[in-house]
Image 1 (cartoon, rainbow, N blue to C red):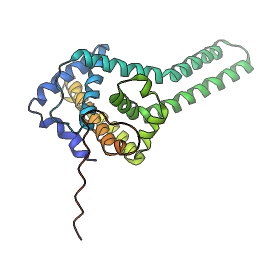
Image 2: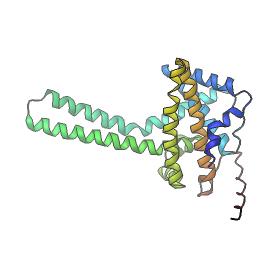
Image 3: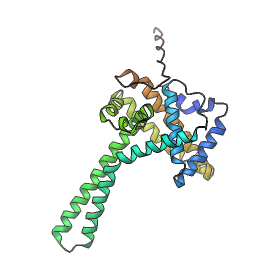
Image 4: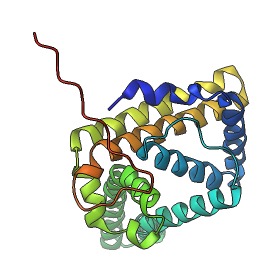
Length: 238
């Protein structure tokens, strides 16, 4: 893994400033939902390029229809995967309402315990989603199909290909997103530019992980354009 490259590869594109500004505009439009599919679709394209060993230049902001559709389908994946959280939240809300409007001590106790259990399940499932989020994005990026993306066996194969590196990447992405928030210090629009930059870093880290570990770990097929990484040079003698 070349972590340093993930933070600076985008600046090697001669048109990097224009592309990041356009990405920042779509990130700004994400506030009213409209831009979210475009940003995700662009992110998926970056991931595919990195897996194929072609992280330069950044993708052009063309074929917006395809980017929108791909991003929208990825949102559908996240919506499907998130159904249990919505279910837990609804059950928690129902029993919390029962507790608030009941005069029965037994019912209040039972309702409180069930609401607490639903809250715990919501937290644990949310944590599980956070762990599997990179795998979901990588799986959809390489298959472009919702059904194939939701196969747990293939998702687990991505996670376990190099579990230590996988968790490290999740932590790094979290830190990068925190750093991106400092864009607000410059001006309001600054946070959207740094947010988009963080998405580019995230996409490159995910693509590197898949390229370095997953494509060599089993039957998952690499995307079109994939070229094997050249062997590492032998270590210098001590």
